[in-house]
Length: 255
Image (tube, rainbow, N blue to C red; front, side):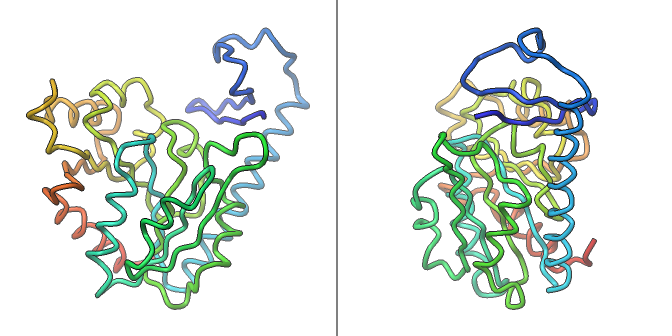
């Protein structure tokens, strides 16, 4: 199934994830005004829905975070710990995005949050990201009037999710030290887009050929203004700084 992408320089194109073609070589298909018009229409529709989602959040006094990462970074574990921490003083709703299954949604159940499951499976393997129309549909599963904060847990992917505004007020990503310190340089789009980077699994530093300062430096080379918070979802180390940021964010003035 084709995927559509918008790059830093404003160019847009579609590709089939199964073909394995080189993104720099578009000689395999014709380009022209019709393709550009179609892509512009797709992104324009997404942005319209994103604005609608943001108005719904604002009208209900809700702040929204788009939480992104690659698969296996510990995003759901961090989210579970976050729900446990905030359950007594922040009313949280979660839109749980996944290609298939309710496994992550089940991990978040019983932690004091409203959870709306959003599977992207479409018979062709499922979308590699959430977009604004999907999130708009998932909002029906949340009582926004009773919430302070909505966290959208995006599909695990280091490229596509950052390209789609879903109506959030801030973008946050989880980046684990098991992924290698070069990832911000190799996959800059997401790192450039985010407001906060949770550098996870720092408890593994003694067991890996890893230097946490080097990871943070790689992030800052791509995004000098992002807040980088070294954390361990497993041990809780550093998580208090994340909780403090999120509480302040949830109580901030709306954009």
